[in-house]
Length: 265
Image (cartoon, rainbow, N blue to C red):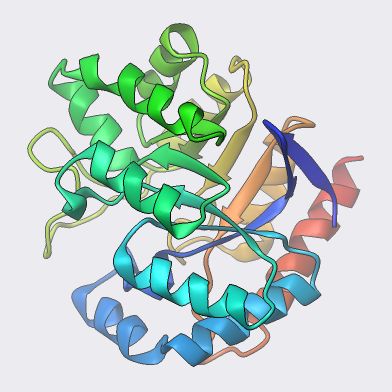
């Protein structure tokens, strides 16, 4: 597995995403519930072990109490995967989310994409530099996520972050709520994807490309081929899996990704 550098970290170019573990399907409330029922602690730990066996050394997941407790158990059992923590809006403040990431043993931390979108939309970005410094003071690489290309343009020019989490799609407005409210119709437009990859080309720091599969809406071979064509040498992808009905999903995704990378070299 190829790796990139994010600050002091060596990170696999295929990063495992944690949204399905926390019941975020970005498809329907029924699928959210199905994921929550399926992903017991034992099943999540099985996926983490499989990921490590495939050369994946990094997980992106929420800095909530569920993930913290799960990872402590996994590491106590000998697991080695490193954790890039995403602040969780339900922690009530960005600072509380960062504190949870620090307490939980994260290797890096970034501000939730919906939070960044909402702050940007409402011109309330003043607290972001302090949050980035708080992450750095804890000895971790600091980043931001965002579904809007403009968020990353701002972060690149104003913050000098260590990495960007760049969503290919901007499925719902975030002006009123950082998290997508239940029942919201999410839209996955290729025009959003095209706009994001254009901005990624201009960023100073590494970008982790996420939602590259459109939350299960895109053909995997096409999606990985598109991502591979737009990855810079220091970039990576982040992909979550829901393998209840396809046990070999992670292995197949890694194969498609590595095949797509080979085709572009």
